[in-house]
Image (cartoon, rainbow, N blue to C red; front, top):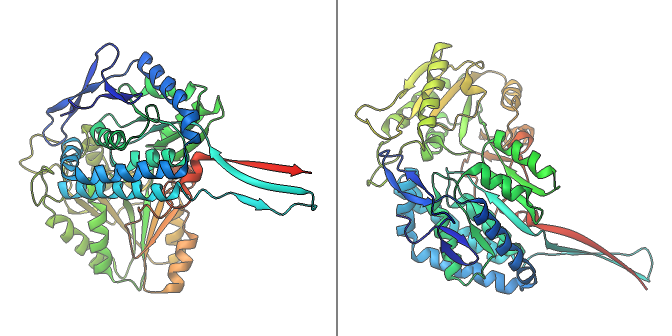
Length: 478
């Protein structure tokens, strides 16, 4: 499946220097899909040299030219969307419709940053005297090393690739080992769009070797990472040795507050549709449900009904709504969370185990738990599985307090019919993003990112490109 790809360095696809390969596993069948190169240190040095060689020319390239390349890449991706979606579904197990949607979103990020490349605005500051001129200019930060997770193998890389290229920065991308093909498609589209050699580079292989080599390299001036909080902390420590600019989009444990005046059926159906998307493997997935006690019964019943109605199977089959988890770790984690919650008094309303008849693949039933204790693991750890825990509340202020009682702060949600309640709760929730009666937050037009231990920096929106730029203040007296 990966024959046309490999390592992409200095404008060319190639093998690893010693020919070593690593297998990619189909999570739906547990069979080998294909193999990709396992980069060695010499390959990484080649990528660094290519990026360094391209840097001065690329930073001097006009915003118009950078914009045109990104727009052409979007056109090439649109032309190959169906074939690309099949690659993603093979690698990740997600339903084909969701894979198509993700690549459509990737096209949107190409187009958004094609526009943002031409909107890097500086500032003129009124001087203290008529003979003084002061201004702020934004310049590319330099070479970027980017690392992405497997749950959204096209959107996560494109947020970094498109922003870096729009800002005038060469980038070296290390996609997730489970799903490299989707990122390879993006790079191929840029290649076909005329992106100069060395501006975009892609390497696959051992994560520790690649991250250590790139982060320790003095020529790399920015790190962008999407993944777990624990790994993000380690990368942040590594980046400190050379004081690199860092953007981190880390874990989440998004609370949902269903207020007393909300429609419990609409809230439950909306939440279920989003909670079980991508088998619950979404960093902003709603993962703790605090429901007013007067609505708990109707909300939980409707949620369980929606969960039971979902069709499980291989994402390449028409009509499938929930595919497998990405790996065996996720499957084991899901079962452990359910067993822990039920042992502490939770009621199992739907799912709870591997579905009958699925002897291969990392499948787990869409699961709904009611009356979950605050001491349960699932209320305190990022689940990243298709398991929804529900707990009741009587006092809204206490519910907000429970929602904020975590070191995560990526996303949060509230359902209410009251504008004043919506404003109060959304402003009180400690999260980088809040959805009010809406759970589809990710879009190219808005900044994506969290607070507390969910990360730093933003991707997307008018803020996204500035994480790849450095402000330079110039004062002239004459």
